[in-house]
Amino acid sequence: MLLAGDEFGRTQGGNNNAYCQDNEISWLNWELDDKGKQLVAFTRRLTALRHKYPILRRNLFLDGQYNEELGIKDLTWINADGSEMQQEHWSDTNMRCFGMLLDGRAQVSGIRQRGRQATLLIVINDHHDLVHFTLPECSGGEAWVLLIDTNVTDNSEQGSFQCGTAYAVTARSLLVFTLQAETP
Image 1 (cartoon, rainbow, N blue to C red):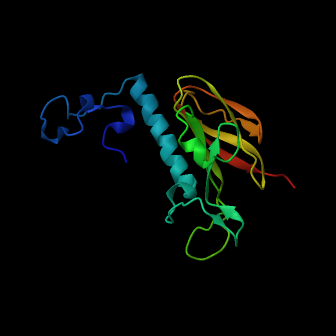
Image 2 (image 1 turned 90 degrees about the horizontal axis):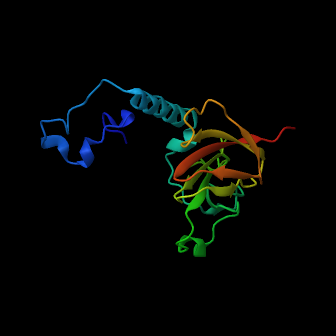
Image 3 (image 1 turned 90 degrees about the vertical axis):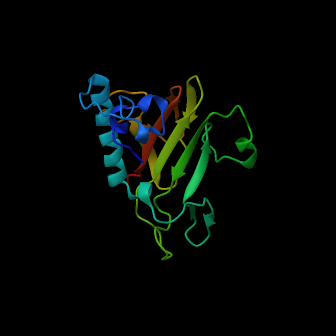
C-alpha cells in the first residue's frame, strides 16, 4: 500500500500518525530532487510489474501445499543453495537470504485446472553482505530473466541466467525474476 508521497521518499520524519500535524511533517513537497525522481520511476516499474503479472495479485491465498491433481505447488520457499527450504531452515538465525517461487501453473480460481501465468522468483537478502543465490531448477523453464534488482539503479538491462547458476545478490536487496520457458 502506498500513501501519497511514499513514491518519492516522503518519510514524515518517521511519524506514522501525522494526520494531526499541520506542519512540514505532514505537508507534501512536490518539488522532486533527482533521488525522488528515481524513486518515482522505480515505483512506476513496480506498479507496471504488478499489472503485467497477474500472479502478483491473485485472489486465492497461496498455501504452498502440493496439488496432487496438477502436480505442482503454488508457492515454494527456496534456500540460497537453490533447494526447497525445510522446516529447520526457518529457525536458523544465520539464514538471511531466501527466495519465494510463485508457480504460474498453479490453480488460479476455484476451478481445478492448470494456470497459464508466468512463474516468478522473488529473492530477499536481509544479510549485510553479498550472498551467492543459486537460481532453482523449475519444470518447464531453462533460465531466469532478471526484472528487478533493488541494488541496481537502472534496471533497463535485463539479464538471463541459466537455472542452477549462482547469482550474486547484494546486501539488503530484493530481486524479481521471471522463468523463461524452454525452447522446443
